Image (cartoon, rainbow over all chains, first blue to last red; front, top):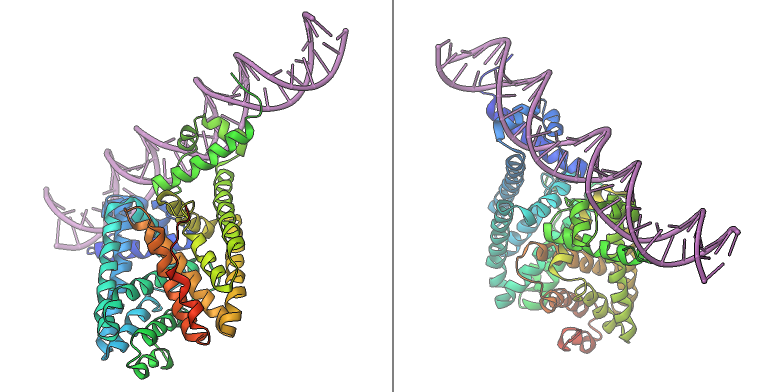
Length: 211
Length: 211
DNA sequence: TTTTGTTGATTGACTAGTCAATAAAAAAAC
DNA sequence: GTTTTTTTATTGACTAGTCAATCAACAAAA
C-alpha cells in the first residue's frame, strides 16, 4: 500500500534505527537487515534510499552531530556571562538527548569509525574545532593565554566521561557527569582567574532541571 | 620443517600481529587470515593454537593490559613520595610501550569490544579498579575525602587523551599528553591540599627521559 | 504511462572454523 | 642402535554460513 512522500519518513526512521541498533549491539557490526527491520521495512528499501551501508552510517552520524549542535545553540542562547556560556557548552554534552545509554554507545562506535572512514573523521573534526573555539572564546577573557590548554583538558575530559559511560551497564546520569567536568573547570578558573572567584564558583552551585 | 617448541613463539607472534593489525586497520574487522599472515603462518595454525578469533582477541587484550601493568609497577618502584607515585601512575599510561599510534588504536577498539564481550569488560574493570585504588591511595593523604572525585577526573581524563590521540594522524607525543593530565592533577592538588604547595608543584617540573 | 514505493529472491564475495594429509622431532619398543 | 609409535607442527582445500548489494516484479498514485 504505497503512499507517496515516504522518503523523508523512511530516511528518518532508518537513521534512528541505525543509532539505536548500533547502540544496542555495541558495535558497528550490525547488518542492514537488522536496521531495516527495526525501522519497519525491507533491507532492499534501505539500500534504495541510502545507496549503501556506509552512507546509512554517515547519515546517522551526521544526525547525532546535528542533534548535538542544536543542543549547544539552544543552551548558548540562554547564557549571558562567560561563565554561563562555559556551563552551557559543557552541559550540552550531557543533555538527555545525547547522553543516553544507546546514544553514548553509538558515539563510541562512531569514534572508531572515524579512524577508518575519512568522511567520518572530517565530521568529527568539525565538531572538535567548534567546541574548541567556543571554549577558548569564553575562557580567554577569564584566564588569558591559559585558555587553550584548559580547553584541551575540558575536551579530553568530556570524551573520557563518554567513554567511561559506554562501559557501564547503569543508565547515564547527566548531573554526575556534568559535575565532574564542571568541577575541574572550576578548579582551573579558580587558579588562573583568581581575580574573579565569586563568579566562577557559581558554576556548579545552580540547580539544573534541563528536562 | 617443523621444529619443536614453537607454541610460545607462535602465540606471541599472533598476539603482537593482532594488536598491530587491529591498530593498522583501525577496527576489529580484521580477518584471522590477515593476522596469521602478518605473524607469518597459515590461518589454520592460528586456529590450532587459539581455538577461535575471540580467543585471539582476548589474548591480545590481556597482553596489552599486562604490558601496562608492568609499566605501572616498574615506575611505582622508583617512586618514593605520594607525589612521585601519582606522577608514576599517570606517566605509565603514556609510556612509549603503550602510547603508540597502533597500540592506542587497538586500545580504543578493545574498549568497544568490552561493550559486547563479557570477558573483555571484566578485564577492563580489573584495570580500572586497580588504577582507581592506586590513585586514591596516594591522593587521600594529600587531599583527604576529595581523593575519590579527583581520581575519577584523572581517570576520565586519561581515557579522553587516548581517545583524542586515536583520531590524530600524527604520532603520539607522550610528554604533551602526560603534561595535560599532570597539569590538571596539579591544579586539583593546589586547591585541596594547599597546605603543601611546594611538593605538588614539582609534578611537571622534572624532566623525563623514560626511554 | 510515468513516477514513487516496496519487497522476495538471488547473486557474488568473503570468512570462521574444520579436516585430512604431510613432515619432522621425540619417545618407546625391540 | 635401529625400528616403530606417538606427539607436535603445519598447511591447502573445503564447508557452511553470512551479508551487502542488485534485480525483477508488483502496486498505487500522479
